[in-house]
Length: 482
Image (tube, rainbow, N blue to C red; front, side, top):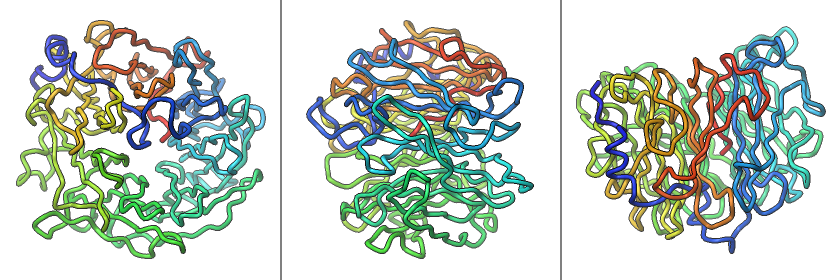
């Protein structure tokens, strides 16, 4: 792999263009507006939760933890940061080896008390003698922040419940619902939820024949008042083909059968492994961003844009996703920093938000296997500038650990950009960028925060020293709540 991709000089040349990115809340503008989606303590500032599923809890390896950094007028640099494990007071169960508490994290106000709650997946949870069952746990929000919790659901043997999660209001009743994957089945928990963890209902949708789910997300793609469930899948019966499936929401909940998103030629649109849903253009419909980070597959032979990874942006519309209007980006697209090089994994993480307050959301794209100079898998992140017509490469910019004002050093296997998040942490109406590098320091992991803007000035990092956690193989920065 060559070295053009997010080298320092290139980042500087492109860097002073736009801004950084916000929550998937459409076109957030100054403090006017709707309350932050993830406000665990109800102070009006967005908070950000992060995961370290490989972390040891005491001597218990791989038990995992989640943490939260609370937003404030000055952001999160000096604000409170708290860590939760399954040994924390009020959190159900116990920390056990391989639980991977934090394998996925999502947030929503489950009990509708005005405080956002955190849902934590533990894909390795053993339930009694049942191995790899997985579980879902809620940590409740409140005026003093996150505390206490309840078990929402346990899986069955080898379900790996908690590896992929999303929340949405699928029946339009104003109460958030939760979707998790049990093996390859979709499990819907319908809100509202009681403090005991009991849901208003539960429905399991059988797996798609010969299909494996890779990620799920939710949003109102047709602006009818209820969310749709989006999934990216691949066929075990048809090579490595990826597809995008949508289950429509409605008053009765999710549709029994999903429909695939098709392109202009009537064939299924090429999917990927990663999803983000948010408002990427100026209309009222939520849009899709689909990352296909794994290139070099048989199906790529007719798709040169897949080299190094690609991101497909699918606009929403009155009839749902408009696959015929999809746009595809990789690092050879005009204006996008770097160059498309095999196995860079452009599209491994995605985040949507308005970083410059102009009403147009940017799209952050992780490139965690990016080679910098001769340093392999150092990683980087690209921000595609938002316009009323959706993302563009023109004016895009990037960050890595070789960018001036970014703490740390370019090192092999850091996987900077392995996770990305965009939300307004200081209430100024512009999204701040948080980046995870789960491979930092031999898989200890660390986090970086970039104040809104295309410059890295004012950015900072924090990790195990700040959190007081055990660093070895923790993989801090694997994911953020969404």
